[in-house]
Every structure is written in C-alpha cells, then in structure tokens.
Image (cartoon, rainbow, N blue to C red; front, top):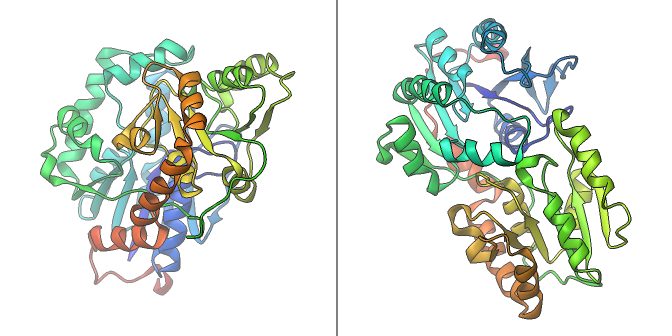
Length: 380
C-alpha cells in the first residue's frame, strides 16, 4: 500500500519542528513495515531537500512561509498539484489540515484521505501569538474563511485522528466535526529510557528544549537561570529563519551567566544526554499544542515546569505555572523533591501510551487500507 504524508516540514535543513520530527519517525517506521511512503512538503526558498530520506520519497515544492501575500501563496500551491498526482497514493495523510489537504481531496477523490490533528488554532491562539511575535499577523476575516474551507476538508476526510484528547472540542467547534468521529492516536516517542530508575547525579540541572521562537518565550528560561545561580541551566534549540536576528539580540543579554549553557540545535544523542541529566524541563510558551518535547522529557524522567497544560500533563507530572510563576514552581519542585515522584509517574505514562512500537501498530490498524488491488510501486 502506498501512503503519502502531507506536511509543512520534514525535520531536515533549517525546519526542525515537532511536525517534521513526527513525519521522520512515523514515515521511517512504516517504511520498515513494508509500506511505500512518499512525503509532500514545503521547500524553503533557496533550499533543496533530499529526494530520499529514511526510505521515503520526498516530493517538495517552493513555499515562502514568510510571505503574507495570499496571491503568492496561491501561486505556491499550484506547484503541489503535480506532486499529489506523482505520489499516486492509496492513502493521503495530512499532518494537520492544510490547503494541500483540500487540494489532494479534489485531485485524488477516489483515494482515502486522513487528517492527523496536531495543533489546531482558534482566535485566542492567534491573539496570544500576536502579543509576543512581531511577525505574526492575524486577520479575522481570513481566519474564518480558512475555517470554512477546512470544514469541507474535514467533512470529506475518511478518518480524523488527534494526538491530544483536549483538541476534540476545539475541532468540533471550529470545523463542525462530530466529536465521536475523532480517533485518538498519540504521537510516538523514539526513545524511552530503561525501566531501572534514572539517578540524576551531580549538580541539579534544568533544561529547555524547543525552537527559539517568540511563541516559546525562551527568554523566561534565561531569566530563571538568573534567579537560580546554583542550578545549571541548559538550553537546546535554534530559531526559525525569520527570528534569527531577534534571537541573537535577546540571547546576547545572557551570555555572561555562568550557570547557563546555550547549545543551539543538538543531535539526538546529545539531546538524550542532557535530558538524562536534567531533573526539570521548562517550557514557558505563550501557547502550545501537545509538544513532543514534553513527551521526550517524561521519557527521560524529567518533570515539567510549564505555562501550558495540554491534556493535563503538566499538572500531573510537574508544576503548572499558570500565572508564569516559574520561580515558585522551580523552588517547589526542588524543595519537595516533587520532580522525583512525578518523573517516575510521567515515565510510566509515556512508556504505556507513547512507545514507538505501540503507536505505530495502532496507527497502521487505524488508517484505512485504500484499494488493496492496486499494485505496489516496487512492481510498477
């Protein structure tokens, strides 16, 4: 069976967010299961992604995500039509609903179409982003026009998945979806540490994992380092292209903090090493979906200290800084050994719910099978 993943990124080049990581992991694993997988993805201006990646065929087209011109985006979208046909998939799986989802449903109406909801935005989400992000523009008219367009895509979809249970009422409200038709399939985690308790040796360490974009309010993590000079703080992540200059200006203010290490983007082994040493992972975002960074932290027995609480994970496995009271939250985490008790609980939750093999098995059992009579690409 041929499966085509439709996404905004593939975790290669400069775009390395959670959506891209999901595509890399789930795509690679279903290739290993014998499926023929292609990926349709945006290509940043001036960049050329590989034609093959982890056994997947990459079909990319230029898309200037920094532009606010609707006309330019429409011109960009025209480039995806031949790629949808070239993929010739039995199942087209969109990582969140995109304009490309609508196009694929129209171009290939006889194929199966699935939407895996990752981070749906409502008006409040856009307003929050506008409050911290100088590049984020919000048009109420454009937002509701897009919602109306996506309502059609959701209605035509053969299956709607969600990676977080708390999205279901939002999906129902925004896109007129019957909640009973939304199926929960969690995102997978590649690595879950061993069953034996992880001992966090040495000085107490606190980490940050995520893009250095305004939505994440990473500067609050740097400020927290100033408030705890006897604690080691490690920041992992790099900014998106449009935020590089802003990040440089902000991060320079904290270069003299001896207890703060700003590592930039790190590979998987380095990330795992930092998480293994850290007692707490801080995420001070103005808003979030359910980030993979949460799950990766819990898989390494880190507790959470965050201003967001998706699916109640922060409240259950850490400290929910709902009033941005990060200093109080870190004091409480350390003074009461909260991190140790909740880190074990969080680890058990991730192992049970998000382990890679379990999620991939559930995913493949859930998605529609398409037309079994179609020949595989290997036989073409």
